[in-house]
Length: 136
Image (cartoon, rainbow, N blue to C red; front, side, top):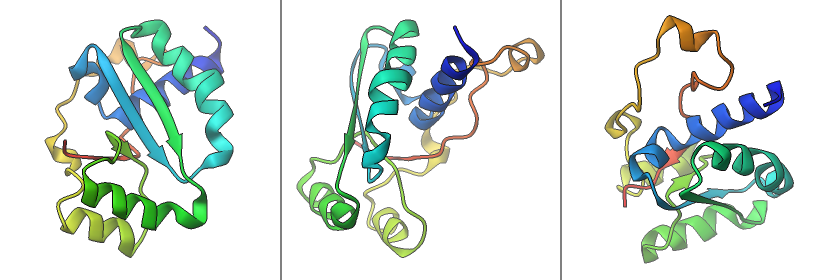
């Protein structure tokens, strides 16, 4: 595994906040406004993640950036939002949280305890989650 792949896997894992590991098998949909990241997700991050967790089907579902807030608001209200939602800073994401559309990160259980050894191995220590989790 290349250093980039190991880092990419750690990023994907951190975005799931351990959620995908708790699922063990099934589908995980990641919502984002970052349409330009689609190739990175589909060609690098998801395949690297799936090399370790083949029974978890991860889909990256980007939305056109100018439409993202309204589209996500509609999906939240209709109960069709993805499992993980990348949150833009400021009021819109806070309003989603305040309306109960996003679960607090504190509700996501850690997958493993980080040991000193895993800190030395790229890809084994996941950084803090960088996405919000839909509470479904």
